Image (cartoon, rainbow, N blue to C red; front, side):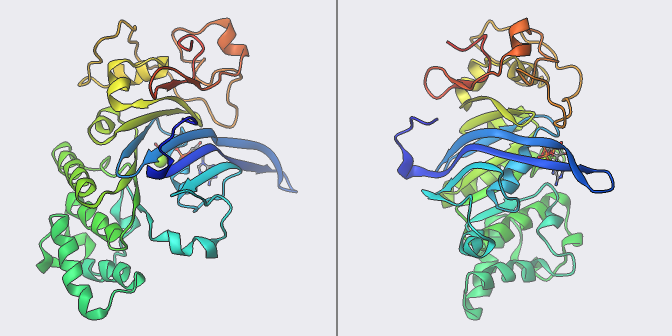
Length: 329
Ligand SMILES: Nc1ncnc2c1ncn2[C@@H]1O[C@H](COP(=O)(O)OP(=O)(O)OP(=O)(O)O)[C@@H](O)[C@H]1O
Ligand SMILES: [Mg+2]
């Protein structure tokens, strides 16, 4: 990722990002251990493109999202937004950028105040960007139409909508401040399958219309394949494989990616003779990650070297990266 020459078109570049949560114990609340939630993560998002961040529960996906939003301070590494290093910015310095980087949650109640009508919630965003009162209502109606909600329902409350409609309103609320980058944290996980497809289509259409960049977080590789130009597969705080979506599905290399793919029945990776194996066991605790490769405890191809050696993230052909010495050159 470091060798890209397309920096002008980059919305986001994350380098060696780390976040360790201290665990305090005892009377003096000494730091007894650290949860290595994000342990040296690198990726890029080109303007108008989507990166899918995929992995099992607890692997650090949402923490990456919160670090980019600066809801958490990174312990190490860089977050470069549109060419500017924002990792060390104070909350005050971040204020003008708050509107540019938005989040869509799994549960839209996270971004919608249940005591406000959906119109008021969107209005609040429009006020934030200084839109004059007379222009707010037409813009609010336009935003609601863009996400497929009838503008006449602006005076209804979030609980009066179905889950899918509420997610549409949550998206309209995020769009009200004219963001460039949206972090979608499992935005469809709580919805019925038929509604999931509609929200994916909506996000795709909005991206085409508005040139938005997405970090699309999901535990489901199938979902990620519909929305992402690139995919980063995450495990226990590390990116294990990073590639454009086509390469990742046609030629998955890391044993963890292969195991994740084998747990998604709809996707058949083509053109590879790699052995697909099912994923058994749970993700180990990030409090006590194993030495060597983080996936060694569950990897069907594990060898002695994997247990001893810290595995580097290596570049293969094109834009394909992998953290496994068995498939690295
Ligand atoms: N504020 C915190 N304090 C301590 N530990 C935390 C904190 N936030 C997250 N963690 C831990 O960091 C690890 C990664 O959490 P995170 O929420 O980023 O995972 P995730 O991949 O988003 O999981 P899920 O798919 O379940 O949402 C977990 O072990 C979690 O318990
Ligand atoms: Mg999460």
